[in-house]
Every structure is written in structure tokens, then in C-alpha cells.
Amino acid sequence: MPELPEVEAYRQLAERALHRPVAQVRVGDRRFLRGGLSPARLRWLLVGAQLSAARRKGKLLVLDVEGRPHRLGLRFGMTGRLRVDGVDGVERLAFASQRRVRRWDRLRLEFRDGGSLVMNDARLLGGVSLDPDESALGPDALEVTLAQLRRALSGSSAPLKARLLDQSKLAGVGNLVGDEVLYRASLAPTRPAGSLSAAEQRRLHHHLRGTLTELMAAGGSHLGRLMPERQLGGRCLRCGAELRRSTIGGRTSWWCPAHQR
DNA sequence: ATTGTGGCCTGCCCGC
DNA sequence: TGCGGGCAGGCCACAA
Image (tube, rainbow, N blue to C red; front, top):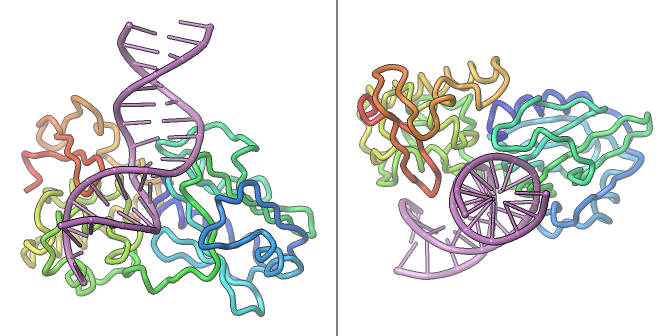
């Protein structure tokens, strides 16, 4: 699924779409437009205009519009893909179909030069909004400092993993990366977020950044060490214990009860 | 404020 | 061969 590594790949791809006049906007499914955004308003904003910047905060991709006080917010949900000039931002998405189906093209910007930027999403869990509230997101998980991470966790009785996935506290970590980071940091996802010692906070910070950097280079959030074992009967690569499946914060979590404490 | 839960959305896979 | 049920989880609305 698109987590921070995928959305960063999408952002880099979206840079190819900058400074190119938009000729037409095609909306494949109105439900993909969020926050009351209409196809007419989208056309009013974009036709004849150019995108001037592609920024990312957490899993939100923000496209600035040249000379206009408006921004486009792109969310990819679980199965969202970005394609520019026929090139996909990522090859494989965990939990998403590998098929490329035209019907799943939910938004298409056609440029005057004949190219296009397409959002393709089988399940419509993603969407496009106008002027997204970027301040509602916590610090980006790739840039977060130790002090910021400490602030995001301290005083919370919520399970550690639920807190890591709370985008208003820390932006960019999804279910797969969350499991991978906690696995590497040897921390149980069930721990109250505020119960970490200073040393454990440092360990988490170290592995958070390390894991994200590694997964971005590898090319996807599904390429962690834990992923192949994330199934019934899966075993810990470190101590051989059978992994446990728990529902934490409403999501399936796989973890090693032997070394994650 | 914080925390937890259910619903949305649909492709895919399994068992019958 | 077809069909129904369960599962996947990011995000949002809502309840306590």
C-alpha cells in the first residue's frame, strides 16, 4: 500500500508534470473528489494553468498551482497509483491488484504537449482535495527529530503502534512500515506509547529513519524483512519464535512476542 | 482533549 | 464452474 516510501516515489514522478500547461481535466469518478470539490472547480483552477511544485508531507502529496493561491492534495489510500506520461510511480503495491485497468483511472490531467498525469485507484480509498490542511499532520516521519518523536509519544496511553499510525502525531507511517519499525526496534506494539524509556525512544527514532531510508531505496514499504513472515505460521528471523497476530488500533499487527518488549 | 470503533470502497482468494 | 464470505487498511465520522 502507499506509505511514505511510495508517496515519495510518486512525488519524484510528479516533478515531471511541473511547468506544463494543462489542456483538460477528466474526472473518472466524482466520489474521488473530496471535500465538496467539483469537476467544474477543478477545471476552473487547472485548465490553462501549470503545476509549479510537488511536495510531500507524510502520505499526502501536494501540488502547487503556478500563480494561484491554491494547492491540490492527493491521497492514495491503499490501492492508489500515480502515473505520468504512461510511467508508473511504483511497480508493485502490496494488497493491490497488479492489473492496470482503465476504469480505475479516477483523475486525469491532460497536458497540451500530449502527456498526462493519472491517479488510478481500484478501491477509491484515495482522493483529491483542494487546499488540504497540511497543519493537521504531524511532523514527517522521515524528517522527525528525536525531540519531536518524544513529543508525539509522551503522555499517551494509546498502544505504541496506534500512536505511530496516527497521522496527526506523526505523518507517513502506515501499517506495514509500523510493524517493520517496531520489529527492528524490539518494541511491542501493545506498549503504551508514553511508557518508553529515553533509550527506547532513541532506538525507535533510529529505526524509524533507518527503515524508511532503506525501504525508499529498495522501492517499497512491502520490502521489509518482516513482510515474508507476515502470515499464519510466520517466524521471527531473529529468534525463531512464531509471530503473533494482534489487532491494534483496528489494524492487523504481526510481531514477535519473544524479543519485542 | 484522547481513545476506540465502525463504515466506506472493491479486488482477490478460499471453500463449497 | 460459480458463488458467498472474509480479508486487506487509510481515512473519516462519531461515541464515550
